[in-house]
Length: 588
Image (tube, rainbow, N blue to C red; front, top):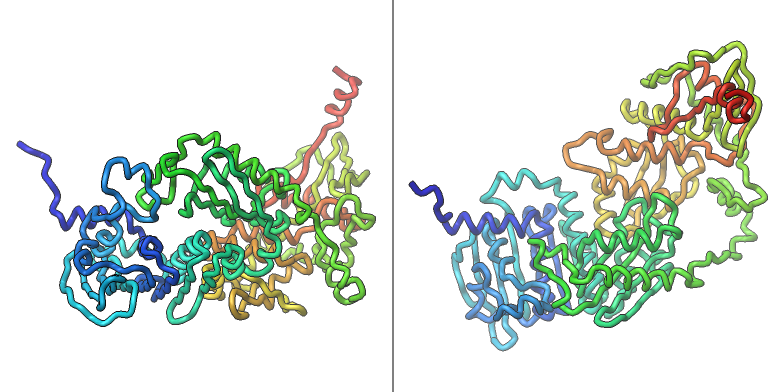
């Protein structure tokens, strides 16, 4: 008895669509790539409810001939591949002839196009993969595609989509990433009737980067390039002082196609490992120009990955290209002497300094000038702390005998020395206190005398504004401040004066990366709470008073409340008298 049978065509179309169209942003990506292949110089995008209700893309390209307009919705109908050899010489964005077939299988589609050789346009309506009608109509030029009610006939997949604001973020990200690779095309994007993205189409990548990420990024761009044999590598990185908390600043393009690549990521990590603070990542716009036969672009259904024939050669060329520009004098910080005479500005700057350079004459912060952080160590704080005991520690007979590196408090007990990390102790206490505030919806915030204006890409900006209430729950009051900008008017009181724009960007980026639909604030932001506590805590290399040292010792060794920082590192280390004597060979 046969167990195998051929699936009906309507099912195979929907299954194939699942490989290409994961969400509205996937649909938008395919439409944009078709517009680019059509030779457009203007691409206009409109989305509603994150693209779930409607996606509309207009381009002024060459258009589709009326004789072809019905066939674009059939599988594997393409003008890009005519022979087996063409598969290894692909120079266009689209080539498999699956996009419109996949989209029309799971959505309602209206396509209007006027071929440059025709006098009028042609309109086709498709629903569920079936052409419902075809008619001629007036149309100026190019192509307009309207995709409505995506996944209307596959509700099981519809429920896996996120909120409209999250899906909108994904859609805008697609426009931003593609726009960077095609500066000669003017991209315009509108979401729910509000303009989000506009690029001038002046064929300057710097203009596109500026319109998306803001002028501060453009001012800190450092160019790099290297051409070797058949490979050309070029692009920009941003001065490493403007690093990011995640790899979201990695923008990789191979033959103008945006990709994700572990190979390129590891290369960038390696070349910047001594130029960026550990745990942070640079912002890089990397373009690779390589003959099509040296790569395979067909290894991923959405063409998000490519495979290089000679990975080592590509890796080394990219590494050398970037490394050669890391010595640029543009990376040397320049003093802004215009601020010297502004006493108020200098005072504000002094308050925002966190840890001064090692060669500074003012290396220590005076804790008494900041709010006393031990005021937060109240007995009323309802937090669960790990319990641990030093069995031989005599609470009645101990003394503080030293202070190493302005960081570690040295305590002598009966038969042991104890080294206590002041930053780790304070960090854990602030973390528990802040976490408790968030749980009880009682976060204490402070109004900023000088509100902070931050430039963001449109995708991040709209995501932040649509989740402003979530940011407010952790103490950040954020408002719209015009194109590509938000203004922050309050932040958590425990941060005091230790925050700056870079840290604010980190907070936004972590929320942006971690927010997931249908999860509570605590589930998505505990790492963020740890980051905020770490930033607010008294730092190493910061002198504290004798009274504050005593309070830290009591908190750890007498009250026995804290033995690990929020990241799991120990706050105290015990060295027994016997171990010390063995080190000096006094005993064997």
